[in-house]
Length: 398
Image 1 (cartoon, helix red, strand yellow):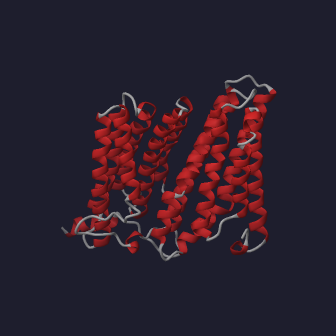
Image 2: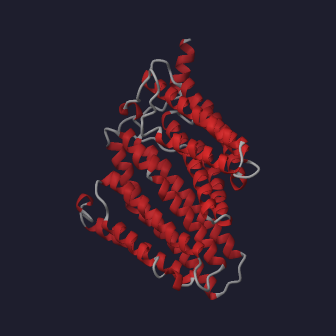
Image 3: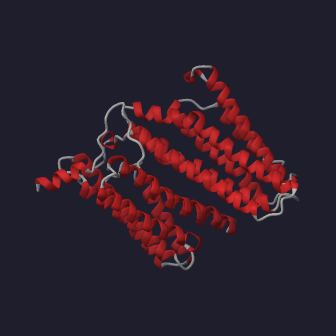
C-alpha cells in the first residue's frame, strides 16, 4: 500500500517557487493532434457557412477547446515525464485523432464516433487523475471526484446525442456543452462534497500560460499553412499575391498583439498571484476561447479571399474577414484586462474601427476588405507596442 502511494505521489509535479516548470516534449507531442483538429474546424466552417452550420461548428469548437484545456490543467499537476502520464497523453492522442477525423461529419453519419471519443477522453483522463492522486491529498482527490461526476453526466448527453439525429442531436450536445462550461463557475458542486475551494486549484502559473500560448501558436500556424497551401495552387496574379501578403501580415499582427506584451504579462501575473487557480480559470480557461476562435474564423476568411479576391464581398467573406479579427480583439482585451486590471485603449479603438468597417464592407472587394482589416490590426499592434514601451505598464492606455 505504501509503495502504491509513493508511486502516486511521484506522478505530481514538484512546484518550486521562482523556478517555473516548462512544457514537456510529451505535452508538445500531444498538442500536434490539435493542429489537425483546428484545421478540421476551419474547413468545416468554410464548407458549411450558414447560420446552422455556424452553430454546429461552435459546438464542436467548444468541445475541442474544452478537452484540450482540461488536459492542460491535469498535466499542470501531473508529471508528463513519467511513463504512466505519458501513456495517458498517448491514449488521449488516439482519442483526439478520432475526434478530429469525425468533425466534418459529426452532425451526420459519424456523430456517435465523435461523442464516444470525446466522452472517453474527458472521463478517462479525469479518472486517471483521480486514481493517480495520493490519498493524503484530500482536496485534490475531492476535486477530481467532483469533476468526474460532472463529466460523467455530460458524457451521457454526448452519447445520447450521438445516437440521435438532426435537431435532437444538436440540442443534446448544446445541453452537454452548457453543462460542462458552467461547472467551473459553480465550482463543481456535488452532494456531500459541496463546492471546491479556490485554494485547491492552485497551478504552476507560467506552465499554464505557456500551454495556452502554444495553442494560440497552433491556431496561427494552421492559418499560415492553409494560406500557403491555397496560394500554391492558384495562379500568381497581382490580386492573389496581394491577398496572400495581406493574410500573412494579418497573422503577424495577431501574433504581435497577443505575444509582444500580453503573453509575457500573463505569465508573470499568474506566477505571482495568490489565487492562481481563479486567474487561470478566467484568463486562460474561458477568455482564450474567443482568441482562438477569432484566429480560426480569420483563417476561413483568408482562404475565401485568396480564391476570390475580386468583385463585391458576400456575406461569408464579410462575416469572416471582419468577424475574425473582431472576436480575436474582444478576447484579447478581456484577457489583458484580467491580467492587467484595465481595458487597453488601442484594442478598444481597433474593435470600434472593425465594427465601423462593417458598414462599408459590401462596397469593397474581398481583397481590399482584408487589406483594411490587416491595417487596423497593424495599428493596434503598433499602438500597444509604443504605449507600453514608453511608460510603465500599469499606467499605460488608461
